[in-house]
Image 1: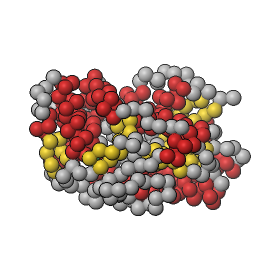
Image 2 (image 1 turned 90 degrees about the vertical axis):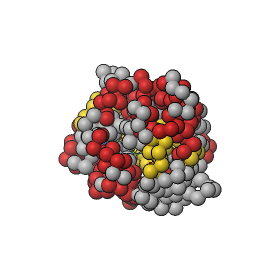
Image 3 (image 1 turned 45 degrees about the vertical axis):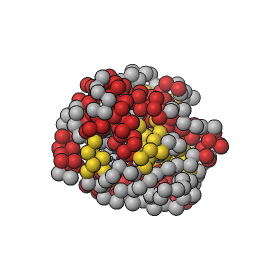
Image 4 (image 1 turned 180 degrees about the horizontal axis):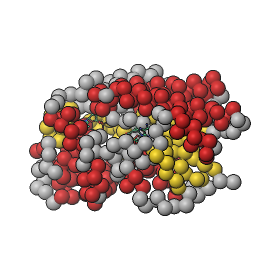
Amino acid sequence: MKQTVLITGGAGFIGSHVVRRFVRNHPEYLVVNADKLTYAGNLANLTDIEKMPNYIFHKMDIVNRREVDELFEKYRFNLVIHLAAESHVDRSISSPDLFIHTNILGTVNLLNACRAQLTAGEDTLFYHISTDEVYGSLGAEGLFTETTPYDPRSPYSASKASSDHLVRAWFHTFGLPVVISNCSNNYGPNQFPEKLIPLAINNIINRHEIPVYGKGENIRDWLYVEDHAEAIDIIAHNGKRGNTYNIGGNNEWKNIDLIKLLCRVMDDKLGRRSGESEELITFVKDRAGHDLRYAIDSSRLTAETGWVPRHDFAAGLAVTADWYLENSRWLQDVISGDYASYYEEQYIKR
Ligand code: NAD
Ligand code: TYD
């Protein structure tokens, strides 16, 4: 019998890679992508698989309980992979309320719908996709493990930490089968140009300043998005119920060093003079409450499943740069509309 999987937020950056992977690699699943299509959701991310017979899209707001319940009534999901969220730290600083609604209340609606199926005697695995930012900020040494105490410091990370706690509460209190993974910073094709790497690529293409917050000394651990999608596939099928898995790239970069590397890659691809793009680097006012360093220990996942990141950073960055250069129409489309006012609010008035 066919299994049904719900992927929320499947029109977004990571979600679209997860949807593609499940549609292509798991013909035994009917893959239902439910997404509100906010500024970050884009069905153009999925044109290559949209006509596959095991794929269906539903426009749905996870904050709307009736819409969620109706979808569950229709499909009786065996597996829910929950990615839908407001995902950008800077936006959470300017508009925290939306993050509380989507990331916390939206998650609770999905948990309740899964619980209703459990009560009806059906077994549904709820897989929550979360972030390493729930652990707070590291100093120069050490790595986040699954037992690192939660210490979220931005409205975004606090909303994700809240939803992680609620998922665990539904496991312990109501017996709902759950699994959680907390991943480091992703990069790759289809990422909205508000996050560091695609924002810098877009600005380099257009010869606009590249805004680097503070002194550019903050450190992130970068993972290619398809490596994350593979880890999600593995955890969905082999993760222990009730468990948490950290996922990371073992690939720490200071922001300024990453941007300089990206500038060299882009000069090369655009046929520009060596050093030309680096001249666009502009140090701007720091982000409020800017976490210094994130770095992940993913040894639990590797020990249990053998997963390791496959993509080397230089190669992944080159593929990413090529993708944005070859998909100028995609880029133009996503930066039309509200992007100019977002950019002005965030960077020009900064
Ligand atoms: P994204 O912003 O690119 O996509 C989010 C998607 O969720 C969009 O398609 C959007 O339309 C949808 N969405 C938003 N609100 C919704 C609602 N109310 N109802 C239904 N759909 C809604 O985000 P992303 O970077 O792909 O992140 C996906 C998930 O992975 C998030 O839960 C995020 O916290 C987590 N995560 C992201 C990263 C990263 O580096 N981007 C790292 C670790 C974890
Ligand atoms: P971002 O891509 O927003 O991810 P996160 O804040 O979730 O880690 O930012 C990555 C790093 O880059 C972070 O330290 C903030 C910094 N940054 C800049 O310096 N300039 C920018 O324009 C952006 C968007 C981020």
